[in-house]
Image (cartoon, rainbow, N blue to C red):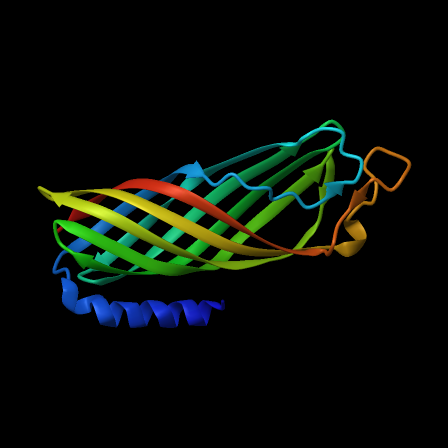
Length: 207
């Protein structure tokens, strides 16, 4: 689904739920990822893989939102480190993504915020047994929601964010072998799409 369709659905959802409890507060919200979804984001597949690979995914970064009543803007930066290790191959990827977000919120003491973001910058670095892949293109978008509890000018926040990333590598730079003499690694395309997701915790300030 395209970013335009996501934004259209969000605007429609906002219109339908606006009467359920519009917020009259000004809010500043800070969130940080505390858990990264465990998925296989590897690019190459070892055709002679003798053991079950080990996947390790971690994330860091944060989100800053400013909401004036029921609508707001935000900025999110997330660094995701993904690693696949088996007997023959160690693939490490560092993905830095910066999103410009639009957010909508309803509720006072208990609030619900949702929205979408567009990738506005970032980089992706991948190494296979110390062989570095060259990245040509990085794009994507994101959706998120946040639950909040308000009291005495402060909020406690729990959120979930999903990022849809597209990347493209120089096809001539993708190896068929890494430290071997035969064709051991395969890939379907130099264009890849994958999804990362984070559970977030945060605090907010209301005025």
